[in-house]
Length: 74
Image (cartoon, rainbow, N blue to C red; front, side, top):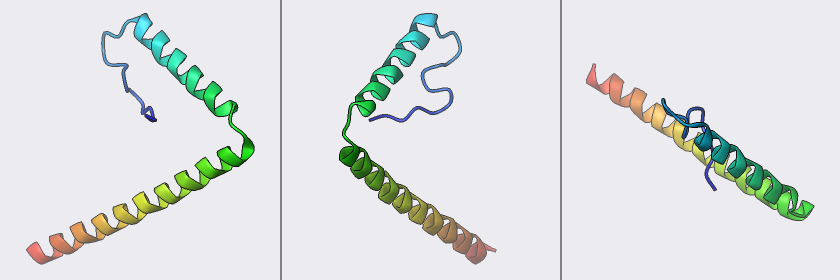
């Protein structure tokens, strides 16, 4: 599953067809999620929560390591 960020696939000179394709892909994704059972939706939400916590942990570790490295250099 690919998460869209602002500007993904919408580079300068994009045609309306590209935007329509992007919107159609998003609509298909939304419909597929709507069709899931509640237990499956909850399972996915729990997985995402765990994944986000892991990324935040890594981001904090990397920021602390960068700060430590900067302190050592000066």
